[in-house]
Amino acid sequence: MVIDKKYFNEYLQIIGQQIPDLIRQFDFSEQAVSFDYLTMSSAVYSSNIEGNSIDLNSFMNYQLSKEKFRAGKELQEIENLVEAYQFAQENPLSEANLLKAHSILSKALLIKSKRGKYRIEPAGVFGREGLVYLAVEPELVEPEMATFFADIQQLPNVTLSEEEVFYFAALIHLRFVHIHPFRDGNGRAARLLEKWFISEKLGKQFWKIPSEKYYKDNQAQYYSAISMGVNFYTLSYDKCMNFLTMLPNCLK
Image 1 (spheres, rainbow, N blue to C red):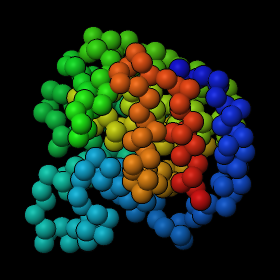
Image 2: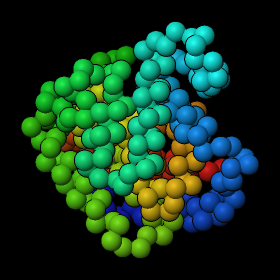
Image 3: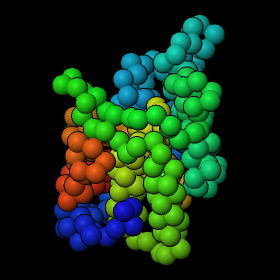
């Protein structure tokens, strides 16, 4: 699924052809904003999407004078996610390393036995009206993830254009969310994984792109675009374009 180019030509027509210019116009310089600051920013916005109430200003002030703050669960969640981003920035993308990153980011979310482990329970996404989406059965998570990473491992063996990298990164994000492999932390892991793939293909400076902020600023659209069926078996990827076209917009 994640190496499917079925929708690529349509993607190019809508936004893909703009990506090289958007990249050239994006300011990757350290003079603009530091790498560490943007890593923390990514973690804050990704956490905010999941309901964390600590804003970027509050988190950065906490970093300046930690001794004056009492670090509650929400601050710990963000600090753990920062650590997971830092781990990903220094290690190649693989299934084992994703599990390690999840074990780091989920320290404040899950008991120790559930961190960095695929779920063994049913999982659904619930909204105000009740169950919105039912993920794949727990006994199928491991084989689905094996297929998922087998597909990803095929991509580094070929030269991808910038347009293809962004296209596949968004598909990876989308498919991962639909598999919903963990008990908690799936959204955070998916957004990390998306950027991890881009940075591995195009260079470490791409950790700086503000994808998490864009998704947070357009959160209603983000969740609507992810929704493609009521369960794993009714997903219609013919509806994927609304999601795939979001990522390049973070460069504008």
